[in-house]
Amino acid sequence: MPETSIKSRPVYGTLAPQPGTRHILLADGDGAAAIVDLARAAPPEFFERAHIITAPAAGAMAVRAPLRALAPAVLDETDRLAAALSRLAEVLAGAGMGTRLYVAGTEGTIGQAMQVALDAGVELGAIATEHRGSRARRVQCAHCKTFIDEVTTQPVACSGCGLMLFVRDHYSRRLAAFQGVCVDAEEPGSAPTPEEVFT
Image 1 (spheres, rainbow, N blue to C red):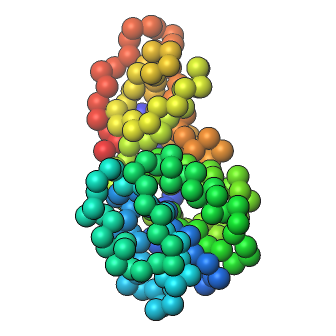
Image 2 (cartoon, rainbow, N blue to C red):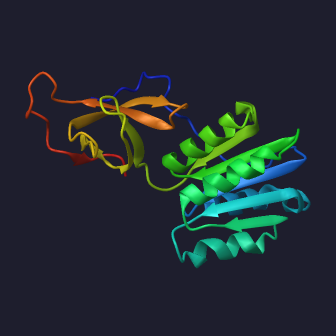
C-alpha cells in the first residue's frame, strides 16, 4: 500500500554549480556521473576550489578516471562509504562560511552524507543532492532499531529481530533511514511474499 502523502519522503534535485568559496562534493559509484554532468555547467575556476570525496566499489576505475580529469583541488578516493563519510566529517569540521556541499548517488549515500553534514552544522540550504542509481533503501526496524542497508523488497526481513517489516515512505533525516514496521503483527505468519519494488 503506497504512502504517497507522507511529507518526509526525500525529494532530490539535479546538481548545479552554486556560488561559494569552497565546494565539497561526495559521490558513490552511481553518483560520480552527476558530478561529471555538473562540471559541464561549472565555471572554469569551480574545481580549483573543489574537494571531491568518492566512495565507489573497490576497483571501480571507470568511475574514478572522469573525476580525476576534472582536476579538483583535492580528490579523496575511498572504496567504502563509511570511509568517505568519515572523511566528509573531517573536511566539514574545517569548513568555513560560503562552503557548499553536493551529494550524489543512492538514497543511502545521500541520507548518510546529509546526516554527517547536519551534525557538522551545515545548513540544509547549503546542501545540493541528486539521486543516481538504485532506489534501494536504508531501513530502521521500529522494533529492535537495527539498520538494514540496500533494501529492495517489500516487505523485508529484519536482520536483527527477524520480523517481516513493511517499509514505509516515512523517512527520518536524523536517522538517515526509512521506517520499517511489523507487517503481520496482528496475525503472525501472514506476511506477504517479498517482492522487488525498490530497484
